[in-house]
Image (cartoon, rainbow, N blue to C red; front, side, top):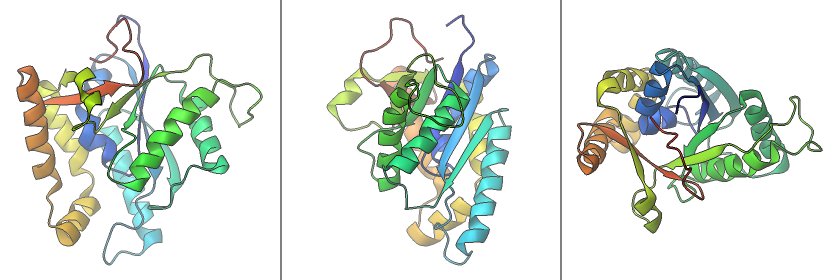
Amino acid sequence: MDKKMRVLAVGAHPDDIEIRCGGTLARYAEMGHHVMMGYATNGNKGHRTIPPDELAQIREKESRAAAAVIGAEVFWLNFPDAELFYDKETRLAFVDMIRQARPDLIITHWREAYHPDHMATSELVCGASYISTVPHVKTDHPPCAAVPMIYYFEVDFTVESAAAEYVDVSAVYEKKRQMLACHASQFEWLRENHGVDLAERMIPRDRSYGAQCGVAYAERFVPRGFRPKERLLP
């Protein structure tokens, strides 16, 4: 991986990227690759008392702070939380994001994720990544020259996980925790509504992935389609 790449991670909600691939993005950034973080929805429904318009502003501020920890560029699509669907307008928004980003590699949700916004994001990214190269599909930015490679996170209990690749994130784990800590409103929501501590959920999983590949902490990904000849992950 001598070439400097453009790496785009796309998550359904603020904090999805940080939890699942924040360490990998931190490693890419340290290696000098251009890292970008695309947030599909604004997370405006995830709180008991903060109204949606105000919460959307808070979540955007938190997301930009998290990306700044590793110097990542942000794409804020601003679709309402729990209202992400595969339709023409939304797909074109994803196409245009990809055309702006011009990534060599995209990391996003597995298509069978538990949340409908996660599943929609996966389908939209995969469809838009191909359409982004089609000249007669018009958006504000010119078409990409090639279809980027896609890696999924969240692939745990399926036959697809036999193809998993691991990234050792032990040396950058504090950065990953700093990124996640920026999402204070999400910590509050999950604690109050679901009795879940975001960090306590993330850390044991990353330790488990680390144990599977012989390191302290790791993140796990599955390539879409054929595995590339050269490893693209750190």
